[in-house]
Image (spheres, helix red, strand yellow):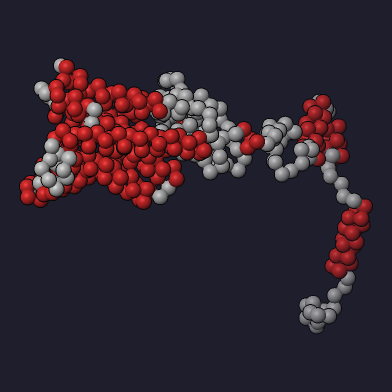
Length: 385
C-alpha cells in the first residue's frame, strides 16, 4: 500500500502544480481527468509496441553503445509519440483548447497519467525503486512532454502545425532519450563501464535542467496568452444544467460539458455574428468589446422602421405618412365618404412642371392618332407617308 502511494502521489502533486500555473484561465476539470485517463491507458499499447520493436531489432542493436537504440528509438520515440498522438487527435481540435498554456497542461496531464501507471508497474513491491522513480522518472515525463506541449499550443494558436509540432516532438525525444541513455548505461554512455549511482545523478541533472526550461516556457506561454486574449482572468463558470444561448444545445450546438459562460453576448460590427464562446480561439477582430468601442446605434424600430447605420436617423416621409394615415383612418372609420376623400388627398402630387409635360405628351399622342392617314386604293394605310 505504501509503495502504491509512493508511485501515485508524485504524479498527482505535479498535476496540481500544472493546474496552479493555469489558474488564471483554468480548464474544465473533466477535460484534465480525461487526459490523465487516456495517458494511463496508452501505457499498455506503448509497452506492447516496445516489446515487439525490441524483438524485431534484436538484442545486438538494442544494447549497442550503452543501449542507445533502446533509449532513443524504442523508449523515447514510442512513448512521446503516443502522447503526442493523444493530444493531437483528441484535444487539439476541442474548443476548450484555446491557449498556448493549454498545450502544456493537456500534454503534461497525458504524460502524468502515463507515468503514474508505469511507475505503479515498475515499483510494485519495491519501495526503493518507487522512491527513485518518484523523483526522477515521473518529473522527466512531465517536463519532456510539457516542453512538447508548449510547441503544440503555439501550433494551435499561431499556426504552422507541422514545423512546430515536429520541433516539440524532437526536443521531447532528445530529453527523454538522454535521460534513459544515462540510466541504462550507468552514466558512461557506452564508452566505459557504467555505475548505476552516477547514472542516476546524471539523470537527476537532466530532469532539473528540463524543469528550468519548462518553467521558462510556462512563463512565456502565459505572456503569449495575455497578448492574445488580454490580461484579464477568465474563471471557470458555475456548472449548470441550463443550456447557454441559442436553443436547447447552447453555444455552437453543444453544452460544453455543462459550463454556461458568465459573459454577455457582444457583437462587434463587422465581426461574424456568432455567440461569443469563451473557449474558442481568439478572433481576428480582437477581444470582444461592446459595439467595437463605438457608440451604440439606436435600437431597431426606434423611428418607425428598421434602422440602417448608413442612412439618416430622421424618419422618412413614407413612415410619417403611414403613421398619420393610420391615426386618421382610425378616427374617421365610421364615415366612408370622409375616409375616401382624405385617402385621395393623401396621394402624392406631382410638381407643376411635371403636370405640364404630361399634358403636352397626352396632346401630342392624341393628335398623332386622331390625324387622318393617307390610304391606298385598297384602303390600307400607306407607310412612311
